[in-house]
Image 1 (cartoon, rainbow, N blue to C red):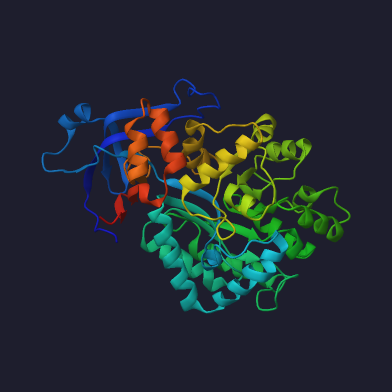
Image 2: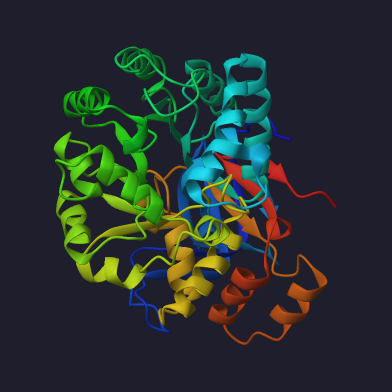
Length: 441
């Protein structure tokens, strides 16, 4: 599936990248979009040497450099998924229940299998195959409570040269015995994993308390201490996804004014903290998150599948709260970023908040990179950036081809991809300057 690296190559064809937030208007904000109809991306040893019109760049290229022709495609930065559970790949499309039933009926039994290292390795490889087939080159990933599940995932990601964030799930109560941590033993395991993997190659570690109900106060406090001592770590957890979950948190933590206050009490809300879902928040809670520099991962296919609710993206924008887009597989119904965009548009329509293609593709690329504090490395096609690229095919299916043939503008073509595209629209995926996926003929 992968090719061997050559030192230099050029990808030629139409390209689109964002230099800033395009806003929510029908036309993108001035200076936010870079679009070249005959562009060139010069790759050298996993990084972008230059991005320009091909005619402008061609005189400066070595005479024998390989030129990969994508003249009838569209190149973009690799997609980013800010919240996904690789261990839940095999329970996708299980009959939908509410969140807590889902955990007990499907998630916990599936995660018990990850005590076996060979199983974790098999699922990690399958997950990355599917992710790259969908054009996603970076994700923030929940593993399981087994340290071996993290070793397996990072080993597979490093073998493919991927930029990934991941962490071992921390939970020391309210789960099957086979998944429950020793309260401090889970943190010792995390510290070992941080030493082995964080900052190694393109890998980063996310501290991962599953959610407040499955961690004792002692475990949450210890997690906060680790985060304070290593501010370059990320943190990922869940927040206000389901009304039953919120009521349970209130019973377990009566001393806290609300769900968010539990995480605040233990020092878990900071600039590198990602809270998945955040559906049932009031505006003061959104403002507290924004003030701490945290972000919310919007998971539309999962929210619809579990009936959790509709995410108010506009309220977050008004509060100054950063948001990202995520698949949340396995409750999410698709690893494709295009499917996530389609569902996000539908949620927005129900709330009177239409999502433009400009804003959608910005979120999948530079917007998600900014939310994860990775925009100095990934998220746009720029000189010096890491060479993660997805190549989209506007004629991937007969129906998509008919629609895009009638499009008059780039905005129309992007919206058609967003609504009619799926993994078949991903012609090729490049990561670290290498082609790691090529769609079958």
